[in-house]
Image (cartoon, rainbow, N blue to C red; front, side, top):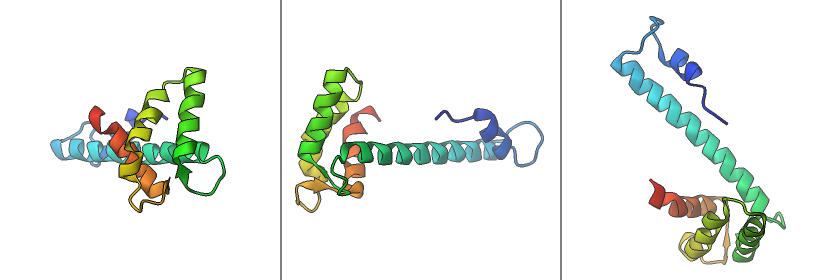
Length: 117
């Protein structure tokens, strides 16, 4: 989902003068970050649902490995990210139960994406 810059501009232009002051620019940046976070959270939830094949609300190493294998066969761009997820699985598995809940999965995604930010 692309962020509509016109929508952000309209919300940030608090005084309605058709331009953005420094303060309104900061507000626009906060609006943009908020929208991006909501989009990322939604995408993460969808990915979690797709990988959680047995719908137990937890993701196992086997489920991530199968998702990585399936995406590799399909030539999907997520393959490398899923493989990186396997490398960071134990670090994200805070309670050491061999499964990741949605919170631990969020931590895993942050570990995987950290080199890009």
